[in-house]
Amino acid sequence: LSKSPDTMQFIVDKMKTSFETYAPFLEQALLIAWNADAEKCKPFVLSSCKKVLSAPIDSNEYDWFKQYVLPSSIWMLKTKEQRFMYEELMTIVGDQSENIVQSMDAVYNHLTTHTKWSDLMAIENQTIIDRQDHSKVGLL
Image (cartoon, rainbow, N blue to C red; front, top):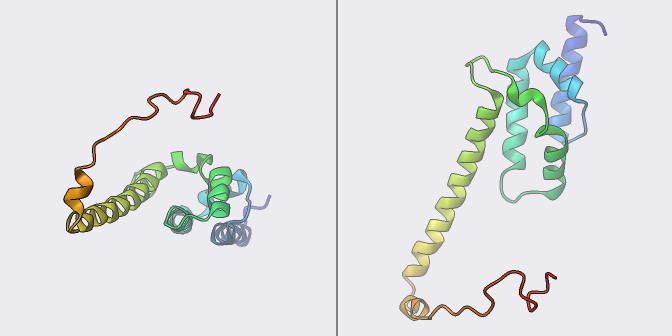
């Protein structure tokens, strides 16, 4: 494999296209692209991760992420800021989960203002089946 700048740029461009279209790619090609220009690769890698992990989650995109992106060793590489790529991914996941928590809190706060909220909260908890392996659950 030639290490000419044109060849390296070609590989980086192809990896960018793979990430933008959720197309399969070889781990080695991603690592070559990263070594050629990590600062150009980081944005498209993280951008696609953010899109895949944003609601609503598309099952095909998520399957691509699980098969090609998540198992990659790219997450163990450091960025220019001396952070591991997995730390960048965890930041995205944390932000996404924060949005979900805020949405759920807003739903709860809205429900508590409903006129029938006290009636709902007055319903007693009843345990009908207390074990997952109970015959009525149908797991066995």
